[in-house]
Length: 115
Image (cartoon, rainbow, N blue to C red; front, side, top):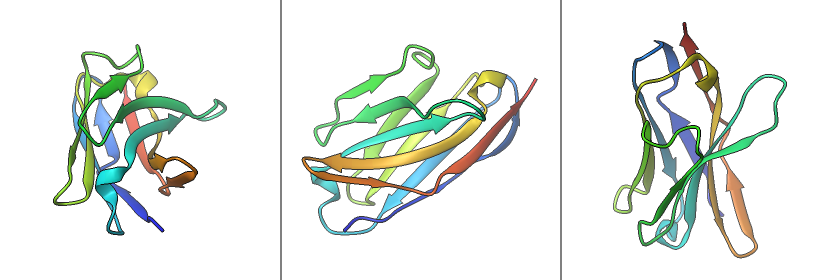
């Protein structure tokens, strides 16, 4: 069982930055692909970025060059550094851990970007 707790959301002006953190419980964090997803009001949840146990990353086109995902396996934590934020980045951001048949989600953290 893996539990995920996100933090770091908040209100920021357009052009600003935030760093989200997601701390995982359990002893096999290093075996999971970690991801950040987001859901804006009235929209479907969408992928933002993922990072494999080996550190390979992928990003949605909408955030490439602005967001950076990273992980610290010793701290069982995955980060999302968000720069040059735009109003359209406003959403609840969720952390996800998955491998094979295992799939876990956090409760989400609100990010609001004012224009």
